[in-house]
Image 1 (cartoon, rainbow, N blue to C red):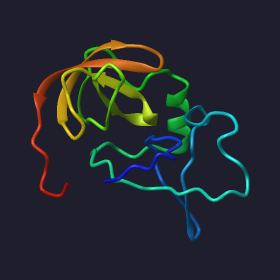
Image 2 (cartoon, helix red, strand yellow):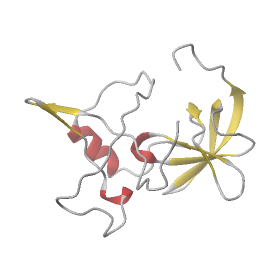
Image 3 (cartoon, rainbow, N blue to C red):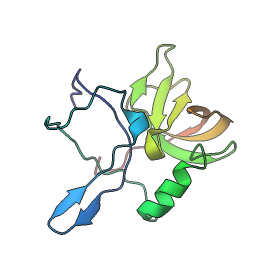
Length: 137
């Protein structure tokens, strides 16, 4: 998949259905002031996460947003490495676009990790095992 140089943000969100349309809320922290202008058309891509987590209401999501990072030290997750950071470590994103730095990984890797260090804006994970991609990917 080709990613545009004009990419403003990348995050996870639930799609809400209202009447004959769909709605995705972009969290304010995903955009810097001045990047979005009313009346301007933006391109949006939707990718299925493949995660089998229960759906939550907007109220539950807002409540969770106020509770800090969506993960805790010791949590285990299977994540996809989407990018490489400046130090050469893999970057995965989970709920709300929260970033997890995963050393010794490459773009496209699917790995099960254990969270070792959680900070307000990002976490660090250690690879437990490499996971083979499923056939539908």
